[in-house]
Image 1 (cartoon, rainbow, N blue to C red):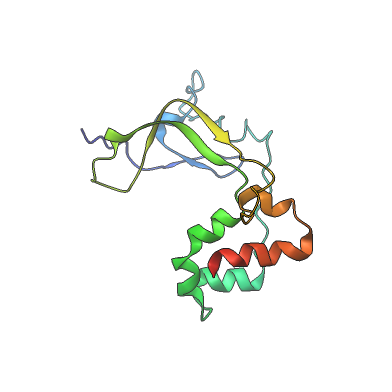
Image 2 (cartoon, rainbow, N blue to C red):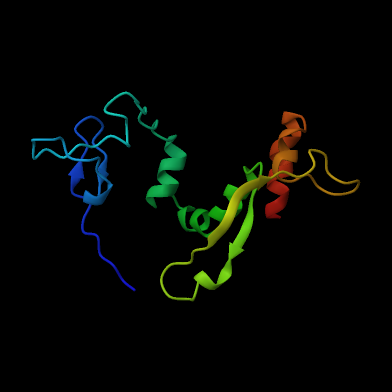
Length: 147
């Protein structure tokens, strides 16, 4: 059943986070002011802004680079090259009925799995194993997955 909880129209005065009305803290007694606290604990938690990405990465993401379409077409492979662990859990598959964006529901505890830090004899290193080898071989090991 569809439920619309409205727009994110409450703005935290300390960090600028936008939240839904139903996420607010209880109203201050005797005031109409809406209190927000879970995003930054009333200004106690300061999250630094992200640094600007290097020009090459920025141009790939913005679509200005000649290889942007290749980059977006293979972005999952690029992300996998830098993954150390894999996500695990008991997945509730009936929740994804083909309507709306793909999603999954984890029933119970979410956990991460990590494989061996050394590849089996005769196999190419992958995932976290790529970081164990000396730096001269790292790039060639990663690129070999694209050949």
